[in-house]
Length: 296
Image (tube, rainbow, N blue to C red; front, side, top):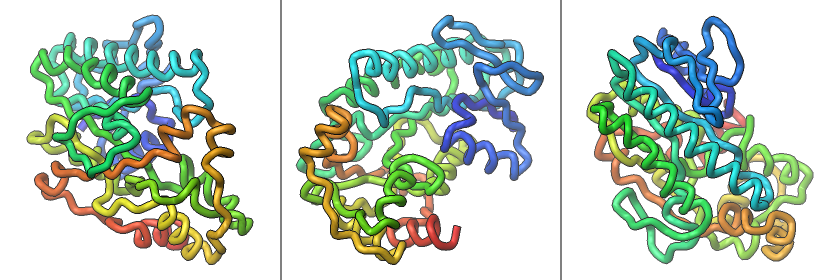
């Protein structure tokens, strides 16, 4: 298969690209850089080297400004615009191709369900409130042009991605190794996570299985409390996990972003993955962290 990927240099994009190439697929990065084997684009200007996408079987859209930063009004604008403009450009370009790609796999986020829920949510649950929820609610419909053109579209709503190479886990390792790690706030908030290797296989499933479309929550089947996460991480690293980070300090440091990320309380389940026969390599947190930090 020939698969074009935006955000191919990011944490998820790199891992997905390597997995696909290993199995003999052709991966075509969509990037602001130029080159013979690169599709050059500029989402702000609405330009893309469309001719290089001819013959693609699928397009995977992972583009978007990182959310792990203090949310000023300018940062919020970039977070939203980077997702809206890139996804719209990809969807409209895919719809205009002949032949059209069979699938558009679009990254989204479990933040669409909000950041505090009393009950567990799944793909059938209602949308929540908050900045990230509002972003996702505007983001996902940007794929409509592709769907209207008969292209199979899957929305992968991603939970907290665990990898020592980047993201939340990478930031936690240093303080825990220094013996100053611990829960954030009261530690009761639920974290819905997924190991990077399992996330790659979710994307592979969506790319390669013609029956996969619609929304899929990419989360492991066993979410944990923040306190349990800290305890397991400390055990795997052989370090204590007794130094809490007060919620007020986290809010002062990161503002609104903290409330909707590290302090969010959201138990997300995936109904679709079991229905599709998906099998997790790392369904529990101890299994995931032991592999990622000890065996991987």
